[in-house]
Length: 279
Ligand code: ATR
Image 1 (spheres, protein in one colour):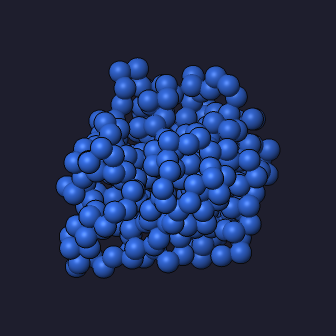
Image 2 (spheres, rainbow, N blue to C red; image 1 turned 90 degrees about the vertical axis):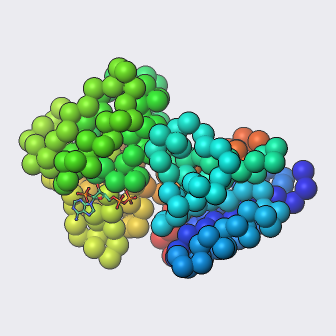
């Protein structure tokens, strides 16, 4: 394969760990390539994107605030990206730009590393109903998780996620207070908001008191690596699942789309943790 030209668009992007991750993947796959950061000011988005699409680039990631704004510039959308309404990965293939969303599917791949083999009948509680939650909810239901309840500060936002259900999905919408009261009924708890993110790392979205023994608690916040929510889960001997793994697995899926190569995660998760801690 000739040099793979990749990148990330967003605003801001300068602290992104994606160049490091994709360079590790390229090294492993034996592919020569580059992954550039493109920080695009909102006022010049249309102009810059049109130029980027014609620059000979093979594919790129899209981050905040452009995951929706990129859509009209693409020729086709993967059906899940279309349902989710957001694209984080674009690939140029057979003369067309195609958009995917690897965030939710990558997250579920990462989560499955800490779940028992058949966990799809387990009860899941998702905290939050924003953009990240949309992708994760869609990936959970397509992976066959049938019981996925959602707790969110704004009820209407949680209700909007119900459009992403599969026929067998059962979802109850809760307040945070109700989620706390019923916490013992859940096997898997997934936190998808930014509450607890550094520098506000003393915040925790709900109390986990009374957690089911052997529950899995997952937080998509990865700075700090161990959030207050995860520390409190650990105190109750839950299995914890750190947010930086989502970063790695969504990138793995994107790299597969661009290169057609399978990537082995191996020690990359530990090395990424080191990078996040240093950053
Ligand atoms: P993202 O794309 O990162 O998910 P988003 O779409 O703005 O960002 O969604 C943010 C999510 O975090 C929402 O679920 C939001 O709750 P609301 O729907 O009520 O706005 C939630 N959120 C953000 N700050 C919060 C806070 N301080 N307490 C509770 N929920 C919060």
